[in-house]
Length: 306
Image 1 (cartoon, rainbow, N blue to C red):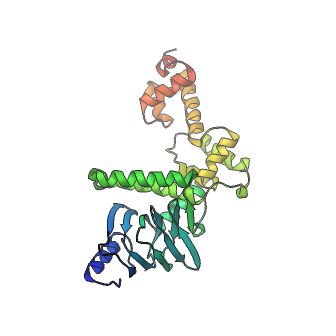
Image 2: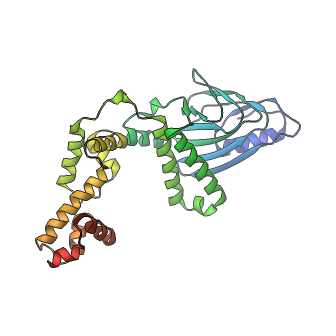
Image 3: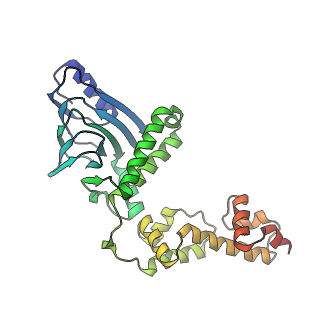
């Protein structure tokens, strides 16, 4: 729903509702020719929007069913998110939770935002998978000047520009979903920066995953699978492997698979190299041969013949 000063405002406000979120608009001061801006891209559970009202306005929304992360690229965006006061300028992002009243009390005439809308359930799942936490702990504001925040902002700008100018990307739903997932993962890491509050990871977290990999190295393991085995988020698991092994879990898995394949080739326990590669979870023979040669200095066929 919106309130506006003339039919043009009502039409533009309705377009913003369709592209981003339903809202109530109040126009406080407008120039003679307001330069409104609206562009939007759908990436499955993620939607990107560029919005500029070209006037001093206030906007009120409950953001039903989805999070909104609003990055002012110019001007000032002042908001009350629930009971919290958040003022963001370029280099900061305002985070608006779903189904919570947000009053953007001052959206300046020169303020144009890049907004990212993420479905509530989708973000909850990604937070649990990546950091082992709850989306309820999302911050009210993100610093985008460096680190993971800047990484997310760079991706947001790059992907947003690409999909706007290359319609084949947004029309391919598989590609669109992957782009949305990439942006969401980067956002989660920006909202949950590494800190010392978790302390060092216990070796049992790493050993639990190592046991699973040794027991079934041929399984098509994913990072999410391994994090579930460890009972932590993906990032914490990778941190633990870096600390205790200096490598990622997937690199360790490849080493285990190579060891098993090497033993089979030495023992003549297969008719072909392909049999051995597929037996131990290598789905691409060329990559298997390259990894094997790097590890053992010879081609796998040489070991089998020898």
